[in-house]
Amino acid sequence: MDWIRGLLYEEFEMTDLGLLMVFLGMEIRRNRVLQNLDLSQQQYIDSILHRFEMSMAATVSTLSDPHVRLTASPADHVADCHKF
Picture 1: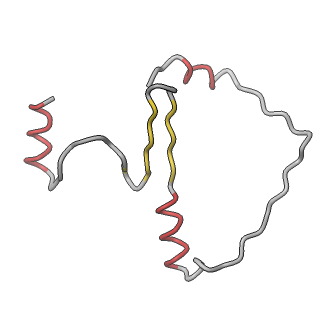
Picture 2 (picture 1 turned 90 degrees about the horizontal axis):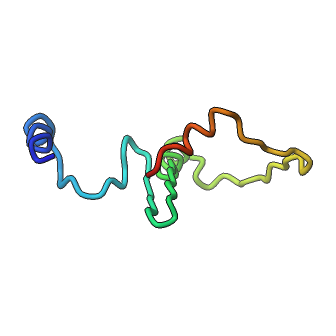
């Protein structure tokens, strides 16, 4: 790990390689106890709204069909095999 870290520091301008919290603009929150991984792009969304002068735009609710039932596909079970 130290060898890889050294190579990265030689090639890129970086700060301390501590806990990963943001990667390519995506915020990452991880709870090892509950085995949860939360990914968010809220900062990116906020910057886009600001850039297009829509940060003060009114929000609207989007209704969804209460009778829709979501089910897991076979591909979803592949993710279950990997522990965080």
